[in-house]
Length: 455
Image (tube, one colour):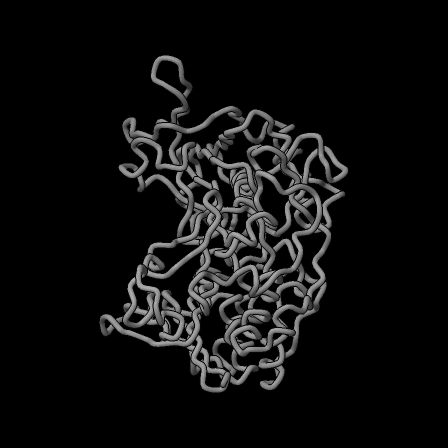
């Protein structure tokens, strides 16, 4: 019976906490394993960012019901929160003031998932064996047994490297001290690192654009700060977004503002610059594209790599996964989100059927379920885990039912165009939009002064 089921949830971010709330409502027992020292550890890394989506798209219904019992006051649904406000007004109360506080284990990094007594190759009787989850905490290795596993561990701590081939650029690992990934807080806690420096930002998604926008603000405040945009593709306009045509207004405004910064010369653009080498030259960095005889290079003080994220699948090596070979998303979901193929229109709501793996009872959820695809809305993850919890409880009708209406934003791409967009604008504008608040952000995740609601 569902009441006897234990569900291990990996990750205490927005989607992981929502999963726990839905599992509780189904009369099952959630155990949430969070690698960080506090719930929503990844969100704390981008709390300086304002989300693209308003509160109405960032609060899960089951979580809201839990919070309501504590006297929680819901935020104005039309306001766009920052990551810090998401924590203060929603995630911290949810994790600390509701019954969820008793099921979250922090500083508990999952190192492996398997079927108890079954290696990956053994089949007979496999579906009846519980899952064995191994994790590491301050006391040492621990083991948890569960009837089902929801992996909502996100992608924030698995950023893509600078190299154009999906590998680290030659020399990248040796100069890590001068490289930042994703979205450093250039106007806040990381200000001293970048003020008065020449900084290159690599990437064409909203994380890159948001960071570049903040760096131009820093340049106006701190003399000697210079901003260089390294773009793998040849057309900067593809990164400007859909402007007024974007259904997520804050995202459209970011792209339009950034276009004006580029036009005014506040950002130096190096287009057609696929990075191949990053090496030291004195106390600076030499970032190069192409071969030594025929290539180009820039010399900078700091490099920010904002080229997206990828899922960490290392601890899932002993379970049976069925993932798309290109974007590493569940095979049933991949055609809906593949930036190589997906064109205009909303990524339809989806749930347990698309997310379950070959080991029945194992589900990928949240931004991790999107693999390397650069598109995600937090509310999509909430619908995923609502369906998954119903499926685990045996309520197939509820698992199949769609309970979500998404804003009409879509990915506009054809034929693997970099940056997830075509210049001709199948979405009715010169540049396309993306189905999520994040683009290269798994894009996690969030962006400059206008970011995303990602897990």
